[in-house]
Image 1 (cartoon, rainbow, N blue to C red):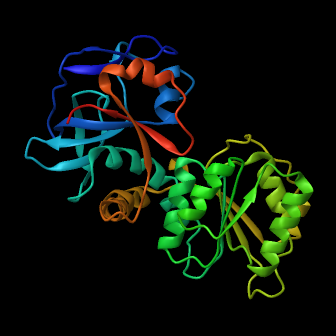
Image 2: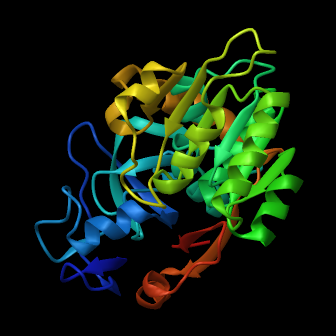
Length: 324
């Protein structure tokens, strides 16, 4: 079969022939149609991730979509590399695709959904009518989070970001108020304070961490006297602006702020089963109906080496098309 083959950690995978995988007892063989390239894929191939590949050469790719031998169209996580014409998967970790969704969109969505829907539903426990701040909303996952916050009937959706063009796109996707992080610190704090005073920010979904979160903490400290609850729940998903913040113990003792994370380590097995069985199918269905949008940058498998190292446009997910 043709596949993306990793020969050495730190180098791009190359297009070539690789031995067909063989499914064992309790496993399934899938003919892969498309697979997304995510930061985790690149980290594992670079050798910087704790789960980096050990036995080389190998096929790569964590997840993808394709057709099972019984004809079902599914999304699955691979037991073997998914950026290949064939892969082995577990029958316990598949999600069937609805009619109307193309393979490239289906491949691009899951990672963004787990970084948005799980943060909103499971960790933040979003409720209808709450006001949501999405910090770093101009990336792929942030743009999905905006659409899902609207789907879950948030009241006001506030977004932050540095890319002005992307902020305008996010407003078109359903956000109400944008705050540019290209302003000076005082202007950002004053704008967020004014927003918080008028529309108490109940939940912050954070994709940046670092300095932007420090500014948000200063802005929402003390709650809002006009709101029945002064609580602000901050759920961090990423650290694009830095891995640490300056946060004193006294700050938390003097405010009604909760800080938590959303990621595989914070989700239970039950949460992950709920994701595969309920949440992801719903997201696929929304996408099939045109109610959930994600932009993709599609490259053929044969161009994997160049696609791997190129810079993908902001707000787009790189998807490798394996076959029609």
